[in-house]
Image (cartoon, rainbow, N blue to C red; front, side, top):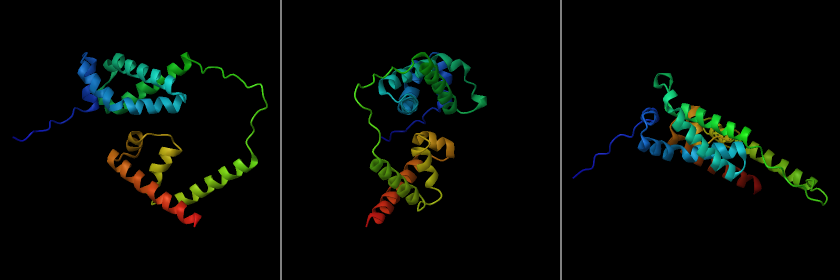
Length: 184
């Protein structure tokens, strides 16, 4: 007996079902995007606890706003990210960062040798980036300087997620080789 794999519903189809109160569709969409939304919240907030709260708020907003989704205006993922970003930003406004307590002792200024080492490392990495093929460089730049997740990079570059993962893996291996060669 051969099992037939049913096609997975699109994000847009799930959002339409959520608008009708379908909890199973919500669970499925949540499972697909919870890590990406948490990553977005972590980048925005910088604190894991606050990011987890913001992620929960984002999915609550998705549940409440599903009726506003119009499939004729685009795919579901961009709508989902817009709702999530808005919810995270709203949470950031509602919950200001806690005030840090200052130490009574002298401040810790960066050591000039630490700054020089960081500048040297940054220069080496930027130089190593030059060895990457044109199709791999944007993936690394968007991930490490743009702070985007692999899903967001795939969407931005309009390439499959698997391609982003492959290019990232390949680019990191090339960078490691280039930096290793430089040290020899």
